[in-house]
Image 1 (spheres, helix red, strand yellow):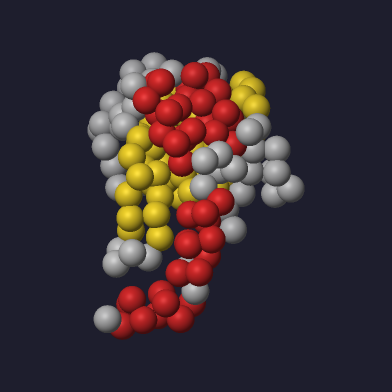
Image 2 (cartoon, rainbow, N blue to C red; image 1 turned 90 degrees about the horizontal axis):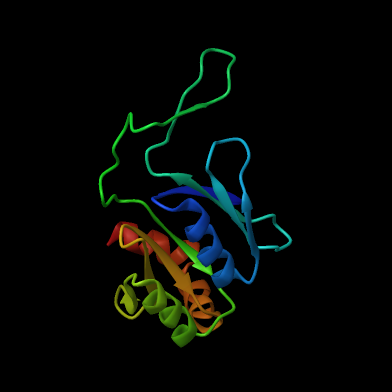
Length: 156
């Protein structure tokens, strides 16, 4: 189970606010890192998405030190990466897509695999893809995402 994740954004506060809206939660500053924000789901697992300025990275600390974040333009992230994650929402598909359209971000319903399940590809700042699953899509995903089905995919 994933409790929290972090993503980069050019406007962390705004992105956290949009994610919180999709979750029905709230956004707040994330104090460990300058200018970072978090979207808080308000669920029973403490789910959050930390949103960092896109010029910050997390690097390993020393032998007994915490991770360290560096910024100030020292790093430039690529526009796209292989990172994505699937996230539950209570909203209907048309509401998720409408939020994406309002933001000017790509948001489109897609089918994964051979009609395994549907998702809404929601492209944060048209750069980072999050897959949002409505209650209907969550049921499809859970019906598909069994150990047996994953083993069959790996063997096939």
